[in-house]
Image 1: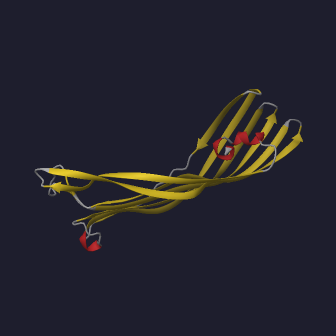
Image 2: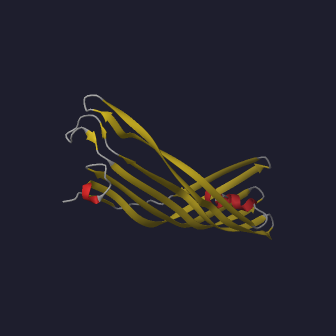
Image 3: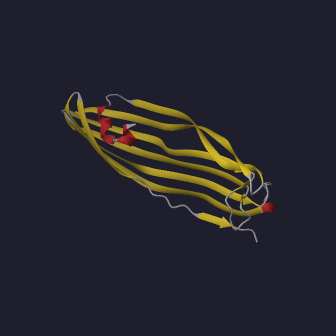
Amino acid sequence: TAAEANPAGLAVILRPEISFELKGLQFTKSANNFSSTGTLANFTVQERDFKSKLFSPSFASFVYPFIDIAPDMVLTLAAFRHELVNFKSEFYTIGAFGPPSPAEGVYKPVRSSLSLKVVNWGGAIGVKISKGVSIGASAGIAIADMNSTLSRYSVAVFDDDFLDNRASINDSQNEFFVNAGILIKPTDNVAIGGVYKRRPRFHVKHTFVVPS
């Protein structure tokens, strides 16, 4: 993981290495206005939790060191895939009374889905330039995919015939990233590191539709 965190740390690896990581996640969305009972003058709001699960490979890398290319010098190369973000959420509501508003004083039924993934693909180099000092750099491309839909309906029938409005984001973008680091070991038991990261920035397109 040094290839992504601080590439200067690659220089401590003394033999070829393959790393692979899997992760399983569960996200919980609490819909605090799922439904209600009673009347607008006297009502009780029900809540409901919605769970979304995902399982994915979060990190993989291959590292190969070239040892003793010069006295006290080690050159290490790496290639990696790092899942920076992976999020998923789905929920719906069937409508509930709420604080009075111009639109009848109710929360209208909603159906929502969101998935967001950002994956870094890159390469790295780490060089031990003396007995106690290593430097390194990594760079690559970050791929972002976002799909989000939030639909509001006039009644709890999730069909476009009853659609009030829909906000959505369906976009994919690629941006470059760069990391640079240094690692200093004044003694065998003490290490001091520093890293500079230029993170990618993404600008996604948003649409809002109101049926005519």
